[in-house]
Image (spheres, one colour):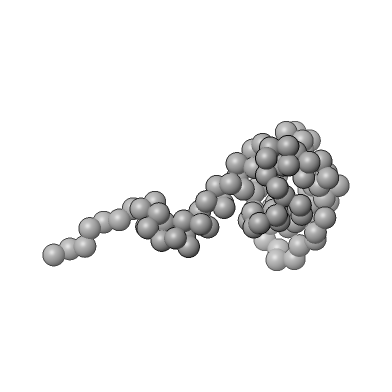
Amino acid sequence: MPKPIVTLQQAVRANPVLADVAERAWASRRLLRRVVTHLPPLLRDQVQAGPLDGDTWCVLAASPAVAAKVRQLAPVLLAAARNAGVAVQTLQVRVQGQGSARQR
């Protein structure tokens, strides 16, 4: 008898570890939508939500120049996150495709 087909969403919900990862990814994307208005309009499409782990949030920048500007705006973004009810203390900015990160 063939095994029933399980959707990806069902598999994620059935596994507590995957469910936690999916929830944190969703929370990070939701947080970015709330604070993206504090970025200059031309940079908004150049930033993606990265991992949200405890009080540290990572933002992925499309280029080193975008990353530099986001780092300059880190205090504003952190304040906006706190105003949105998310207790983020540290913002990491990573250039997409690079493993290194600087903290603010």
